[in-house]
Image (cartoon, rainbow, N blue to C red):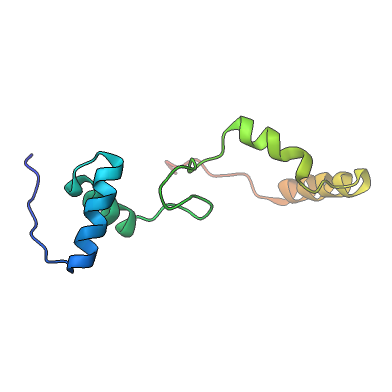
Length: 100
């Protein structure tokens, strides 16, 4: 499948900024514009940087590093939560097979 072509007009200042960025990144201007349009139409989830340098999903290592800084439940609260989850699970009806 061939790529589509698009011609646009942009202000001179924007073109100069695009040229500087393309030179700094050693990338064609068209590539930068494609990436910018892609991010505009499908923005990354919150928590990611605009340049995409932060992974969209946290890795196990990232979570392990954050674990000590996260709030933790006291033992009694954790037991109460586990009991609530167990009670809620027991109160759910059995699922019906999808072919019925």
